[in-house]
View: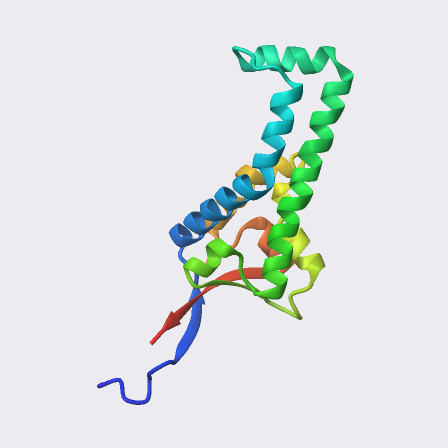
Length: 165
């Protein structure tokens, strides 16, 4: 076949797990830079630099005000992170990392609504039981036919790759 008439055509197929991982890593770097970096300055001003993680935990456990502040900041950062994915995936069908690899979020049933996008992003909530998804989601993705995470199965969404001919 000489390719006549195929210029500009594309189709959607299974997304590469490796591309999905790299795209997610890029999104996390962007989130760290835009969302979490400003909070680091706040933490540096409130929580003194300690030699170890255990001393930081001890400081937080002895001071309820610090502990509450850290919890509020974690929840705020999680909400902003979830909004990053929800808004970009709703408006553009992809996050910045996904754009770089031609990956798109698609609904398997109706429109891609905010509830579905929230469910697929539940793993970003840094409290139990959602943190279990940090382990469960990637494991499930490795054993499903279409490389779907558990949260994607629950939200009836999937990530597809656009292949150009």
